[in-house]
Image (cartoon, rainbow, N blue to C red):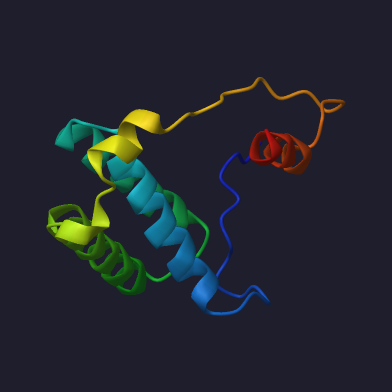
Length: 117
């Protein structure tokens, strides 16, 4: 069973789809892993899986390096002073985590009720 059905190079998808896939997954790998070696391991596997799908080695290497540079630039860009919410906003922020159930009340309805009360 092939669990990694990435878009093949001769697919009818727009050409930007593979770039979005690479950028998105590299970004996820960085967000989900704290150890650099773990990131390298999973990116190496991702690279090999794309090669097995038929992508050209140079093209995928270029995309992965661009995505890595992009993620590094995002992670190391200092936030502007106005970008962070005020301390009062952080203290008053409420997160509601609900377990998903297909027969539950729609999220939109919960938001409406919250805004109303």
